[in-house]
Image (cartoon, rainbow, N blue to C red; front, side, top):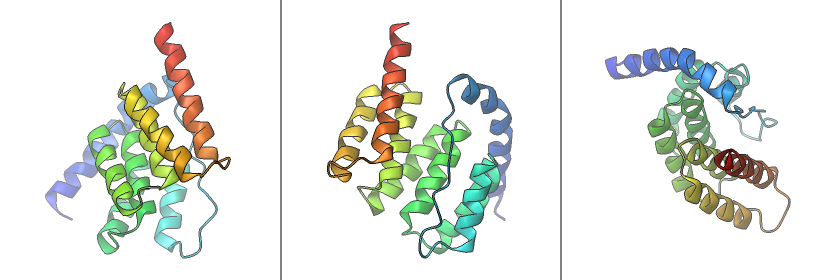
Length: 162
């Protein structure tokens, strides 16, 4: 394990303790792992389980290893972004969301989660841009990601008025 990676994992563990209160006070999104997709590796399934258990540092470790072995998996990059976001590490979260969207510009999960991260960092216009892109990605269909991001934007706007 490199020193940088060990330091990142240590920081992630420390941030988990600090962010727990922040997330609970700000309607932390619940993560419901999707049913295993065709081709999901055992590692990705373990990472999804770790995220569902809110073990974000554990998920990051698994996902980082998966990312190193397959840098073209938008799902892995998206879940890395989600895990870092849940730890309040937005710079890393945005970097991984950007990687997921570079691989698949219409990745519904990455568009939704990044939109929520934009709201958490008070960047409403960027969240609204993600919502518009997400609506195009869903091609008029009723994607749950659209509804979730719309609800998050509405909550954000309501809180801004108070």
